[in-house]
Image 1 (tube, rainbow, N blue to C red):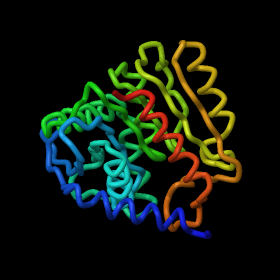
Image 2: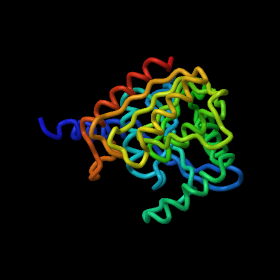
Image 3: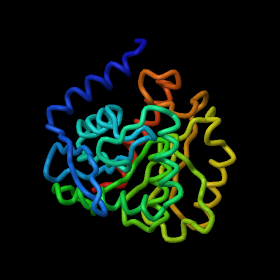
Length: 245
């Protein structure tokens, strides 16, 4: 039975690819970006997917295809810019750091991606935004902005709240999927977010997975943990069924 789950994910992604996903070139504030859109049907609920710190890569495309195979339209956003897919750690830190310092721009890029998805026929009024690592932090930024989404989901994402921000205007439900062994995003930050959400009356569910380090969902990496990936993905799919029409 070993590795059966991994093989299944690959098969699902290959099946979903037949839904004819494609690159989408778009602009936000006059600058070019390149996302990815796939939709199994005209009425499919939308998932806005935000990438990790290496930009929109094959990993996000594979996850988008998996979601399409489950019946969801997916727009994988690009927050770095067309052709900007950093491979060196210093470059990854530079691009994410620029957006962490300019939260207004981060929000604008997410909204611009959502607007582009709408222009492709996606149902933005029946949508969830989700993200991985840096993308998870971006998701929470969008949640704090008061964006009218059905839900916000993070996988091993950044959880801290910038000074001067809070969740008082947050709409929609939050699902936080985290690794208990994550030394990048600590359990103190996890608990702090739980307290913040409770204080502001935000509906949320937060789960940690034992033995799972940071980036535990990234296939073929040394951090990948199959059991945590399988369980978190199953809960994610269940959450989508609960909050989307």
